[in-house]
Length: 626
Image 1 (cartoon, one colour):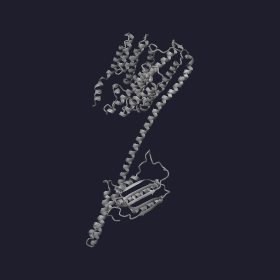
Image 2 (tube, rainbow, N blue to C red):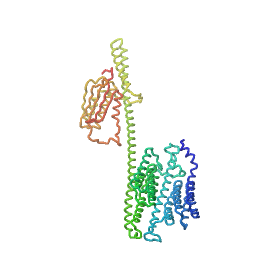
Image 3 (cartoon, helix red, strand yellow):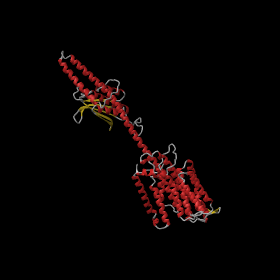
Image 4 (spheres, rainbow, N blue to C red):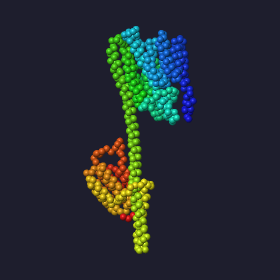
């Protein structure tokens, strides 16, 4: 067991301490900020911290306590300081993540609805009751300026994004935990990440057909180096083009630099964890808008992250990226419209500019949705192309395996046919040897010279049979039906049959074609027969086929017979020859090649400049007479 596995195994019983420890840290921060120790503030802080502490072991109770904390603050007439509000918002984010990660299906979806409802409540406590104030301009409705209502809406959208992102991360952790449960005893590469391990204690069942979730993808060292290097290059590019002022010691420069760093983290982890990258990108966008920044060069990271969610994320993350593209376009266009109105001084005259602002908002929304949506669609297209390429490679590999298996079957079938032929050849040779031996024994006294003739015949026949037996590569003992064995003299009959079928054939013999053993003659006959059959089936039957049987020799001086069959091909095939991307392997060519090899010769076949050419060489058996 590795050191990491031993450490995780030792800490496993104590994982429940994580959330209480976070609650203690939050309450300690509340004390360290020097907040007034009033009853309302202390009660709210205790409730928020209790919701965090119980989010793992009792998620339903944690959800109820969080609701009590929010309701208690809403019913309290006074306002709490901004540090308290920030700590309370952080506690809500942690509680939502814990409930979504460890709760059951009902509590998880109640947490999602609560995240939507808590966003305007927390925005109200931050803006109307809290220290975050918006400029007061525009028409007064219900005692509040229009700008305050729009600001409240904007803050509600931002908090809803943060809360829903926390819920989505918890949901993905729960799905990952279920997928990794069966891999606890597998190889280290298949075990869950530390993030998933720390959050392990619940279940989120996967539906049939769902992709295997992967909150954290394990990358190779090269991929990880490339992603980190790309993030560093992104930071330098943004510093050079848009962040000259960020190095200045002012608040605007520091916040701009903070936005850049958060976006750089999202770019760095986009392939390792698209879900975390999307969450970090939303965090950077929220920081950018709450600090009052307009469009920055660093915003290109949003396009990179949306592209990564569609390319690397599972089904949930992909749809989260698509929803983020639409919601991001809405939030960005609304934010840019409001900042433009403030920049142009539309204060009390805002009511007269509503039509222009509405048109500007519509234009910005269309442009933003188009740009963000195209980034997501591009990632989806690349994912589809990559999956299609992988499927294509798998199909080609399967077809290659099928062709290899089919060729093996063809070769084995041809060996079986050859075994039958050899059985007849050897049986015939032995019958001749026995007959000659018996005849010589009976004729020894009456005609002594007949003994020498018989012995010569026996020697030649036995030598030929021995060569035929040596041709076999293995013992094949399957019983085969008997049949007549063709020889080289039967080639003419086969040629006449092909001519009668409508294929013009020109037959030519050159030199002395004797000395072939029975196995070689059968092989020669079968090769010519199969070549003519292929020419009749696949060739151009309107043009003649030439068959040449010629006396020849190998480079090493061994005599033999050369077989050449040449035919013309059709200009276009009349029937498909493939079932996929690769041609099927027929029985003809492997069978001819196997016969030639087992007869001690060679064979080549393939397209030639003017058609299809089959060339074979079969050696003459030494010591065999014609």
